[in-house]
Each structure stands twice: as structure tokens, then as C-alpha cells.
Image (cartoon, rainbow, N blue to C red; front, side):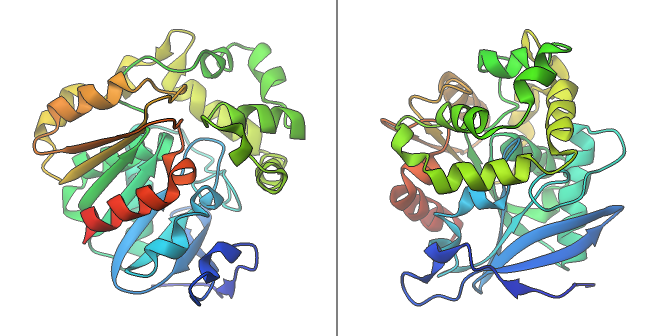
Length: 293
């Protein structure tokens, strides 16, 4: 296990409400990629995997509470947050290979994985391809469960228009974040600034568009990235969490997946968008803790 120096993350103050230590910022090498991640707590390991254009900061309302019972790892995917980009071809198989490699680098044999949006699709692919590494699976507004998706994401796949739309600014960052929630008051100036800071890192926007175009076109998610036909073979205990007003991926996809994953559990949050981990954090943390124990 080759770890670089870990330091306390002073920006993640939400972890200290009950006297918990703040998460530590760490770095590790996974294949050719220098990876940044946060770690907190002790107990059974749980991996948090964020969505497209985001970072480990997406779990700011969850790392502290979950670390009361679990050893929590929140990774920045390649080309996101403070992780270096991957110079090869992005694919679903690479996503599962990356997660498996991250767990191997940390000497973690089997973990609970919570994946949001793109992170949900990668977590699901990992459970399908490397089932021995995934003890329990939580899908949060997950990609990969249907072709339907928000129009603005499909527009980003159009040449020239996509580059113009994806150009980072505080205004476009706020607009994109507000699309992810039911109540825009959850999108604070501090959150906008943090996400914008990461998206403004050279290469971050091109990575986001590259990943999106790999799995999406103007019609929606490409057929090869929709995993519905594989769900009946999923043997991992699975919890599906979704916002009733999710405008990124419709809630019908959650119901469809629930009908296909053997023994799965489904919870739909009312008055909630694409990020129940933020908008319904207390209920989310309680449900996830109960499921993972």
C-alpha cells in the first residue's frame, strides 16, 4: 500500500459537529493516474464515488455522519477535483478497472460502494465485473439505467456548441448545480466557488466533455452504456435512492432498475432532485447507514 502524505482537510468542517476529526486529504497512484481522495472514520470500508464534473466535495454532508460507523473513502475520479486526468480512452470497463485498482492500491478487498450519477454507473459496472470487490451497492440517481437524460447534457455532445456551453464560469457553474437540486437554496456561494475552482483547472472541462461524449449523444445515453439487460445477474445487495423531481435522470429509471435487480430496495425522496445526499442528507445518511451495517 503506497500512500503519500495525508493532511487534514480544513474545508470539510461539516465532519466536526460531534467532535469527529475532519477527513484527511490523501494521494495515491492508480495505474498511470495520480489520484486525490478524502478519508475519515474507522470500521468497515465504504467508498463514495461522485458524478460527472464534480469531486469528493459532493459528499460534504455525508462523510462526517457516515464516518461515525464506517471507514469512509471519497475519491476524485480521474480528471476531476484534484486527481490527474487519464490519458487513455474512457470507457465503462476502464471505470470499473479504475475503481478496482483504487481498492487494490489501498489493500481493500471488499467494500460498500455509494455511487452518484456517473459514479453510480461506474459502481454498478464494478459490481457486475468485479463482484468480489463490492459487498453492498448504493445507487444514487445513477446513470446507466436508461437512455433518457437532461437535454442540456445531450446538447453538450454537439461539436462547438458543447465547448461553448461547457466553458467554466461562476454563472454557468451555478446554473448547472441548480439543475441538480429541487431547492436551489442548497446551492450556496461557497459550493459554487468550490466546484468552479475545480472546473477551472486546465483540462478539467475537456475531460468532462470527453467522458460525456463517450457515453452520450444528442439522443441520450448510448445503448452500450445502458446496463438494464445485465441487472438480473447482479448478485450484490443493492439500495436505489432517487429524488422524485430528479431532472437529470427521470425517477422512472429507478423503478425500472428496482424491478430488475433481484432483492433490491428502493427509496424515493419527495421534493428532491438529483442530489438526495445533499437535499435530504439526514434521511439519506440514516438509510445508507442502516443498509450498509
